[in-house]
Image (cartoon, rainbow over all chains, first blue to last red):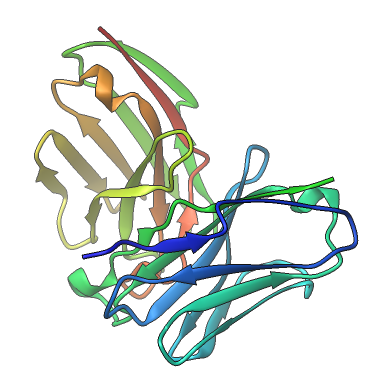
Length: 116
Length: 113
């Protein structure tokens, strides 16, 4: 079974630009969550999508947005990039059910975004 | 109330030793507690997870101990190996699933040969 696939793996952008990152979840998984990882702030939750609807949102500015398609693939977009947006962006997929063993989340390798 | 506090920040043990990483949480609504292992350049990989209806769970060399009254949980790695050298993160979430994880700050473990 293929794992979570994130593209691209590395990205360099200039301040003020926008960027779109892509995540393909594990086949059959309907929930996709996004996280930002930085040395200073650690791993922080951005948002979660399930069946094309945003179910939860973390404490990030509106420049960070996302969407999910009918095949469960998800994209996140960051507009008007700032230097502080440089981070590893991780996507996690899960079956999306409530509790029990269906709840486990599996991460992709991430997209390393550098803003210059 | 959303924080998960993890300690120590770094840990060095000899091969065969039993490193212990501790986490404490404040939000009593948390009911799912996973541990992740991350190698440089990789995403976090799920190691083991526990729910508050049990006090201990073992999977291979990894054991989670959970103390609901103290709001603490810990990871023990038995017979540690150099290949276990990685960063370990504890996390917590509500509603029994991993939909919105709150992570600890991470522990960098080094296992010396």
